[in-house]
Length: 150
Image (tube, rainbow, N blue to C red; front, side, top):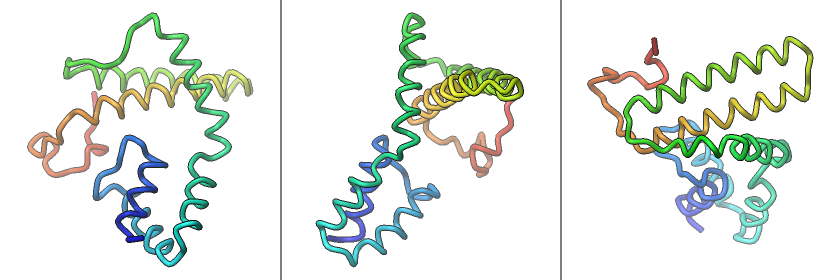
């Protein structure tokens, strides 16, 4: 099996939304794929099956789903409005503030719920960003993460 195919399988299993070249995870998966390439196909499939989702995520993802179900009445987050991403990013920060308060209060249950709300809002931002082409003029060649909002 080729390194490229191994990398594709890893991306399909670990990042169903896909990864693009230049992404740190993509580069790390390329290194992992090269290391795995020496193994047999059966060992590769066993590796993917074993590591396709971590135990922590198995507990966390249902919490995110519950968060989404609680908010289904609001409708979806998909939007053609260019400000939708910024609005959702604001929600990430609001949820992070709520998480901080729960942590400072020592409330482990509320902290877990707020953490899932932060993750859910961040996932929505990532989902919307998939449809937005990179605007080099806007970011002057800087990575998007360096763009300040405010």
